[in-house]
Length: 425
Image (cartoon, rainbow, N blue to C red; front, side, top):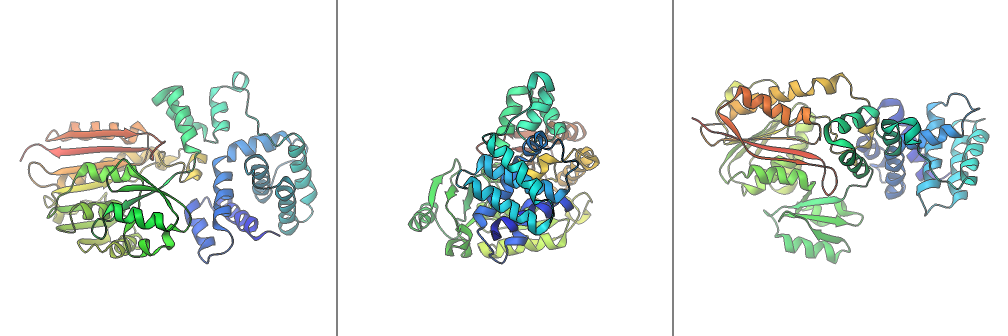
């Protein structure tokens, strides 16, 4: 039995049973360096990105099979995905190794698994989609791009067909690996030369301190261990650049873990001033300190706190506040494809109210005229973005929008950035 496919199966089965986040489960299974990480990630993320499409096609071959058990469904998804998408995998290996897994984990069902895969293979291993005229626009888009109908409907209502399909297609592509240069330790061109000399492909991003890097083993390099860069999408980098904190500033980051934005801010501040970084979970606050230590940043003090609860001792203390609130994550589906498979539940409905409370607290922490609040999310849902700002401005006429940008999934993650500035003493 192939150990890489076995690990991919266990990861996908774990996620199916526990509704876990892909990056956490994958990292847990691969932490000991087992198997071929690149193959396992490709198979796991490929299945997740195309799960509804795979399930729809499996059902076309499943008429007499009855209800599939979760483990059987996972194996069939893996087999169909390898046959349809992984050109480097021979058909005999895609079928044979999947059947071996079935023999090991669900004895007696390997014949059924083999029959479905062989039927799909005989038909050319081509995934079909619903007939839009017969089944409707919503079902067609949901299945074609493997995205829950509730998310598709939300985007259609907010942005129309063309933009919705553009975002759905972008969400199915692999996200690039983007880094931010730590200019406290190295100049951008020096880091670029070092990485190129080690065989990496390095492309300059749209921001002065950003690069897109291709190649395996980046976080195993001495450059990473020495804190010459941090991994961070350009949209997240742009948010901090928009805030533009200065050396000597007093900055507060309310939802800071794992620390990317407050560490980027510390670099812009030339490691001068002070940053109070908070996160709801104490363990995640520790991640901030770990990142800051690797980057050589000494001005960050990280601790646990609930951003939705006002800390009176901080009122009027900050020159600028980062308010990167908890959100639906609909702008980062390419990184967390499991999100697009889930319905929009009660927690989602309550998000704008929580976001408004956090933003209100952030506004109280800002000092006199000129103080800045950065409100940001990694979503493309207007209810969590502009509508939250509209409500805030109605209740706080002493603030005004200085910069506002809605980035859509594509070149960067989907991201909302709004810089608010206090106008009056």
